Image 1 (cartoon, rainbow, N blue to C red):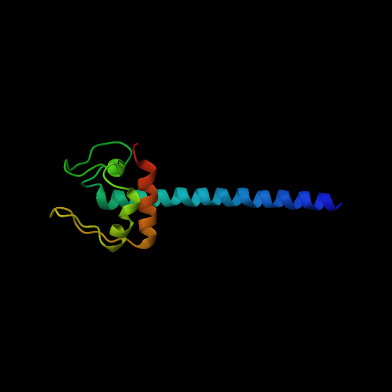
Image 2: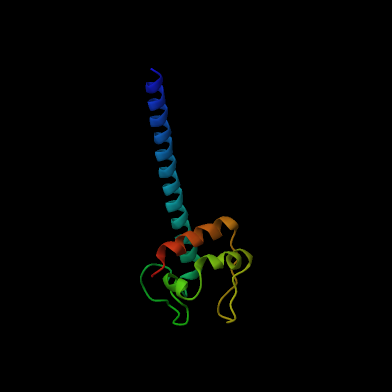
Length: 113
């Protein structure tokens, strides 16, 4: 009887872990889609924001190649405090912490090796 209870507890714990990992995967997927939408809305007029395509502005690097220039996670502070570059054509962007997380999640997912 005691062993049956332990097995039942293990099965229940396993089911909870599987459910939790499934929810985390869905949250992660939703976060990446949110990041994709944000970049598409704010950046696609100059940058290629997807896995394919060329940037509308020849000077703007495709986002899938950002990791060739610097670590994508290093953008966290700039995205949250004000992303600004030295050229006058690029507007300054400031994103909320939630948006920064979503953007970085998406950017990590599209980087070319």
